[in-house]
Amino acid sequence: MISLPVNQGWCHQNNVLLLVYDYMPNGSLDKHIFGGKDAPVLNWEQRYNLVSGVASALNYLHHEYDQMVVHRDIKPSNIMLDSAFNAQLGDFGLARALESDKSSYTDMVGVPETLGYIAPECFHTGRATRESDVFAFGVVILETVCGRRVSCSSPAGFGQLLEWVWRLHGAGRIVDAVDPRLTGEFDEKDAERLLLLGLACSHPNAGD
Image 1: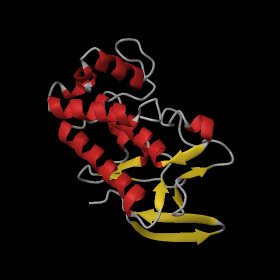
Image 2 (image 1 turned 30 degrees about the vertical axis):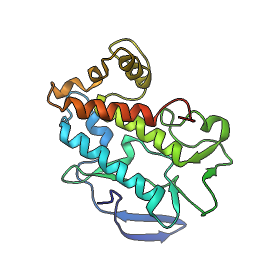
Image 3 (image 1 turned 120 degrees about the vertical axis):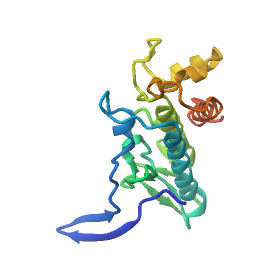
Image 4 (image 1 turned 135 degrees about the horizontal axis):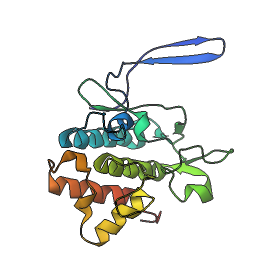
């Protein structure tokens, strides 16, 4: 199943375009993984399925749609959750469909994406690519598994989630990064696999 919102209608009036999508009763992903002590905790199965859903949506945009589409703003607040907590990738305000001979989109006003989710090479090239979408997806994976924002205060005092998870990986303790609110109720092998995938997608070296 492709995890993209279904457009139910539209309205264009007074130079304002409104699109109507299915109602997402569980709001956005960020409200659940960063919502504080009173927010309901997503269980492991829900988190794993959410990551799979966003991966499916990106694969469709990058490889299966008539034109390659770069989303350019993948982050938890743009991932909506339906009544069954299935992920729907939304907010295509920055998205661009590329012609068949193009592999990137250059914005003349700079890099419009959200800090923390921008691939390092974008600051130098100003170009959005499938790879830059994948970088942001990797950050989302880590945030979903760890329950922490990309810019956060980690238990070890690191100010960046990526740096902290890389350090745990180097020490052979990557599973220690899993959200403690899960109280150990998760599949350790799947958690390690997702964390390694997140690090691979958000690798600081664009060539990797």
